[in-house]
Length: 379
Image (cartoon, rainbow, N blue to C red; front, side, top):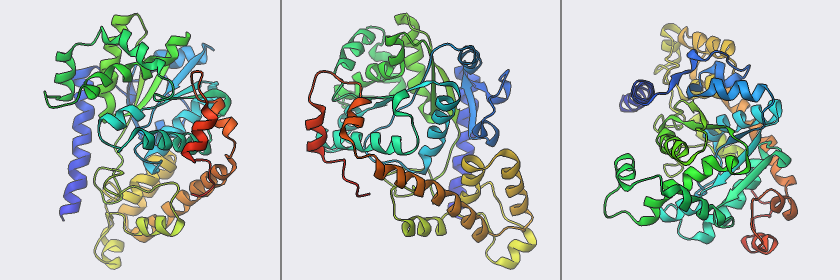
C-alpha cells in the first residue's frame, strides 16, 4: 500500500538523519550516555540522541542553576506532537528546579509567511502561553519571551550577528537571493533565544528538539563559541508521524490538537493509519506490524514505559491485540491528558498572571491582552 510505503520511508529517513547527525555532525547516541535519568521518554525511545547531555546532567545534579530552553512558532496551537517536549520540560522543572525559558517566535512566523499579520502572531503567542501553563508548567519557574513585546531581543541578535556570515546561512538553509532579509537575519535571533538564559548568568542550558531542528542548534553552538558563551546541551526526539502516517503538520490537518472536541479526537484516532491486516481473522492469525501503526507508535513513545510498550508491540505482532484495541487504548490515554488540559486552561483567566511571566519592557501589557482578547474561556 502507498500509505505503508510513506511511513516506512519516513522512518527510514529518520534513521538516516540520526546516523548523519552522529557520523557527520558530532551528535551522540542516547545509549552512550554515562548516566540516563529515570525518565520515561529516555526508556521509551522518544529521546534518541544528544549533544553534551552528560555534562549538563552532572552540573544539574550538583545543584548548579540550570535552564531548559524550548520554543514554539505561534502559527497554530498545541497538538499531540508537543507532548514529549512538555513532558521533558516538566521532568526537569519539577525534579531539578530548572527554569524553563520559552521563546515564541512570532517574528519568524511573520517573515516566513506562516501568518498574515503581526497581530495574529501576538494573539497566537498569548494563546500558547495560556496553553503551555495548562500543560503544567510552573509559572514561577517559567519565562516566556515574545519577540514582538521583548524587542531587546534584537539588540542581542545584532551583537551575535557579527559571528554569523551569509555564506553559512545560505549553505545551511538553502536561501537564495529571492528570500527576504528577515529570514536571512532570523538565525541570529534564534541563537539569542537559545542562549538567552546565559544573558542572565545561567550557563548550564539544555535544549530539547526534534532531529530536524538540529541545524539551528549547530549554528547557535558555533555562534556561542565565537561569542564567549557556553554551547548548550541538546536532546533529540525521534520522529512521530501524523495520524495518516506521514510527517505531522498543522497545515496538513493530520495532528490531534489538545483543544479539540472529544468527538473530533475520537474520529481522528479511528482514522489513524494502521499496521493491521485487512480482516480480524488474518490479524489474529498473522499479527500486525506495530512499527508502522500510528496508535502503537504514539502509545509506546509518548505514553508507555519501556516494558509496557514492548509488551504492546509483542501482543500486536502476535495477533493478541487488534488495531481497534490499540486505538481504544490510545484514545483513553489522550482523553486523560486533554481533559486535564482543558480543566487547567479554563482556570487561567488572570491577565495579571500572564503578564507576570512574560519577559517584557516598560509597556502596557494589560492593554495588549485586552486588545487580543485571548482570555476568553472558550476553547
